[in-house]
Length: 257
Image 1 (cartoon, rainbow, N blue to C red):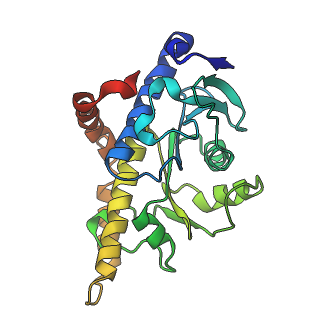
Image 2: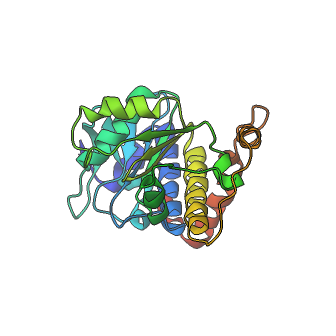
């Protein structure tokens, strides 16, 4: 169903609109922190209590995404609600295949973020993958899966292999391709991709230095991951999210429209 962007807020539930605003904020934050690839890549979010997803119309820059511009699809990638835009942008097939694969298999996941950053692609091109060279990297110890490159993701049969390689991890490194993270909320997914990107940048920098790399003991890696996966307090992403939203609101609140 196609609809004017001006009518989207009145046509959807409160839960969906709240998700739209948070997802649009996530797109803007990805742009602000340099984790974009022109019009490419995607962030998707599940509308709470449904099997319906929100994703960007393929053709807009992340800096242009607003709550009312997001497209609603089902778990098969079929469009359910499509806000009209002057350019006729729809949903990218490869993006829908990757994101629906994850949401089909992981009902604990609200948000999926996929990137093609320079540092992420560099780490994805190494045999070792993400190394525990920094505290930022060690927060992901035991939570990373790997998926071998099969070409651009256009074959539905690859979905099963993506699901298997992700398993119950929060990170999937797509070898020779890029990064993917999942989160139980949009806030937590953004936190994970931010810190994963920082870890990849630090690894690339360290690998370029003329000295041996120092890897901490395995026990230290395990302890670090435990600290960053608390059971008795909110996840780090939820803690930082209000401040990030305030930053966006202070500079350009158009994402929330």
